[in-house]
Amino acid sequence: MNKVNNRGAGALRSLGAAKAFIDGRVRGDVQLAALYSGGKDSTYAISVALQRAWDVTTLVSIVPADPDSMLYHVPNLHVVPLLAEAMGLPLVRARAEPGEAAELGALRSALEGLHVDGVLVGAIESDYQVSRVNRVAHELDLRAFAPLWRHDPRVLAGEYLRAGLRIVFSSVSAEGLDASWLGRAWDEAAVQDLLHLHVARGVHPCGEGGEFETLVLDAPFFRKRVRVDSASRVWTGSSGVWRVEAASLVERAG
Image (cartoon, rainbow, N blue to C red):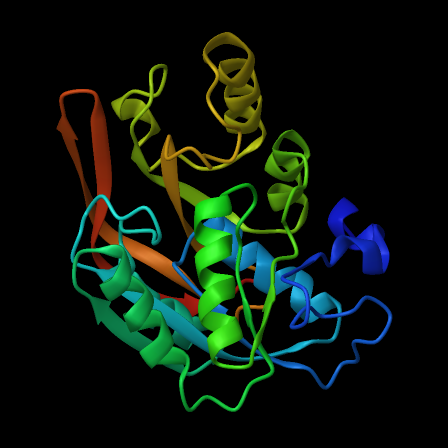
């Protein structure tokens, strides 16, 4: 079991006041909708919730029209339906027009009518994202749950590996991250390189500042894994994207 889960109830930090999940009062019958991008943080948040016996019943994916959205992950969102199938979970998708009001409205529309107690998010340090998701949750009489909130990103970088997530880098946009990182596996060497870049150039070890985005292809709780059949690297100026062009589901080994 990884370090986040070893911290017990204190690791399950909740957001907001009246609508917060209270440590010690939460039982396994709590039902959650996970705000899901296909990246490492939202996937790991699901992993933590499942290990706490919380019931993740639905994935919610918001597809922003704005490629520079501050609220939502953008690269390879077209792979999320395949990831939902890999997990065996229903998926609610909503498209969001540019602008904060429209992006929050899309989230509100996606969550309305779901029979859940709260929304699960993978935020680590983004006050912008957390405050706005919490606002929507409050309006819908839901609770917001962020199990990774304020955890040390240098520790989290290694915990993703120990949790058995298979991760690749899907975009990079920071000094020190070149085209060779696109499609690179998140392994021990990558973690060490990120920690070095954190010290040398201030790169956030989990990409919370927008330095990079990721895509998860497999996890211990997946029923099947995602195989990338073809992908391309697109590099422009000082940033790039690794775009999955074709992917399929295959049986998990073991």
